[in-house]
Image (cartoon, rainbow, N blue to C red; front, side, top):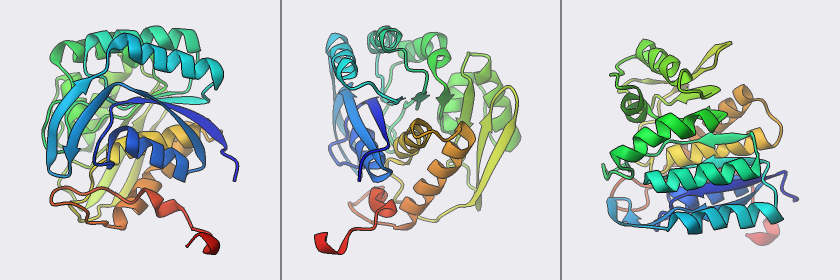
Length: 270
């Protein structure tokens, strides 16, 4: 099978393989894309939490992005964990040279266990300089609250926050509703022309480590393959739900999802 699109992933690593760049690579590959990477930080973590974060120097991140892209031009870029202002500025500088419009930004701020992955100064830089470069941003509810200085309790609040984020310059906003304690999942997609709410039954499981990284990478892959942003979000959400439903139950904490849920392995490789 020949990959349908090339995706450059700019994000931090997860030693447990459930989130971050490891989850991104698995997702892009499982959905028929070719994954390239620029690692922003190395984390020591498992399903119970993050033990440590070692930042990669901004200049090295820039080199990874540019050297890779000069040789293999990405059809889309997915951006995840950016832990400092210097890193964000380095990524912005690199994006100007690549000139890829299909940019999906997942504004990663806090790991599942509560470990903060970005400092306050960097959040301000993200709001002022990077959001406007993205075609789509995919914050979860806590991230949307942090970015908009609002409280989100219901779908109406999600729509209000998305409208605030539109003013920051993003073309499309997908606010993920997984943090709400409801039986039905509602994810809100908003742009200047339309509002779309994706409704799905919430799957009861503690094993959801890496769902945000996975969703943004899935959307980037579908988008790079030529689907419009609405369809890309719809298919990305469907893939994540299918992957959650497998309920792998690896580890002692919040386990990973099954990134292979989209693959049927040929009999001769079993």
